[in-house]
Length: 66
Image (cartoon, rainbow, N blue to C red; front, side, top):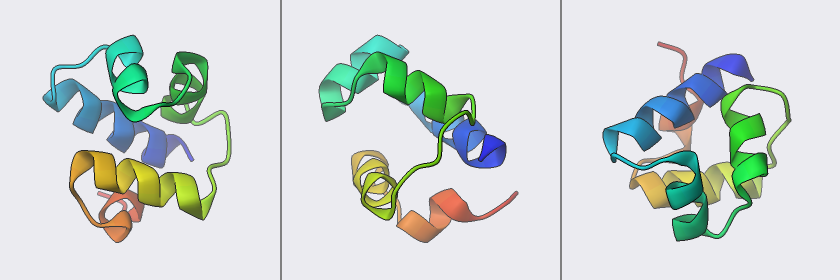
C-alpha cells in the first residue's frame, strides 16, 4: 500500500495540487486522500479506478511497482 500511496502522491504533485485541492477536485476528503498517500488504508477497486480516471492513467499503471 505504501508504494501505491507514493505513486498517488507523485502524480498529484506532478499536477501541482495540494492534497486539499486535489481532494476537492475529485470529491474525496483530504484526510482520506492523505491516508491513501501514506499507505495507511486499503483502497477498493472502485477507488483505484476513480483515481486512475482522475490522473488519466490505467488502473494497472497505479498498481505497478517501479
